[in-house]
Amino acid sequence: MADEEAQAAGTAQEQPQQQFAMQRIYTKDVSFESPGTPGVFRKQWQPQVNVDLNTKSEKIDDLGNYEAVLTITLTAKIEEETAFLVEVQQAGIFMITGIEGENLRRVLATAAPTILFPYARENIDSLCVKGGFPAVMLAPVNFEGLYQQAVAKSQEEAAAAAPAADEQGATH
Image 1: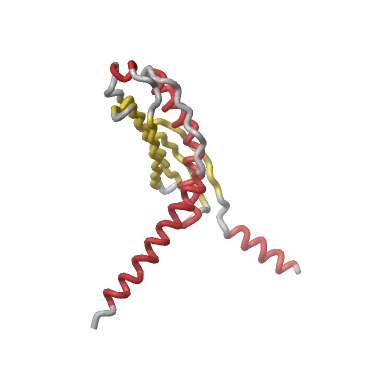
Image 2: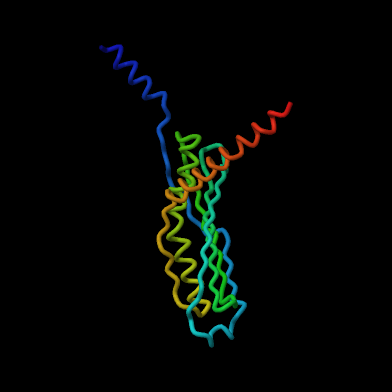
């Protein structure tokens, strides 16, 4: 009995403890353009708004620190004229230890952007208001759902590519 407890304790000590900690949040890049001003201010404000999201991450040192960058590009058009285009790259440094492989990719693609999103949203709103436009309040984003969709899409593409590769290899 004591041997089993000692063995269980030894196994628990061998497994690294999982840790996810925010180190710093910062704005990496900001761009605001309003090419249709001042003419766009004379038009009725019923814009067509397009929002693009992108995330990327990279390991920045051997201590388990990763930079995650959330890029949000928002384009507002009235008729076919661009009222404004705003792009924000909100970044953060996260220390992640004891998490590897698919779980690490999931954390960097879901947890990190979920933390960064409110900062990016506030930056976008502030830029639009300072640019003379109405406030923009972006709806919350389900990064876990987006990640699952991306994984499913890549698996479908891999499955579709596999039969094509088999057919090419089957020539006699």
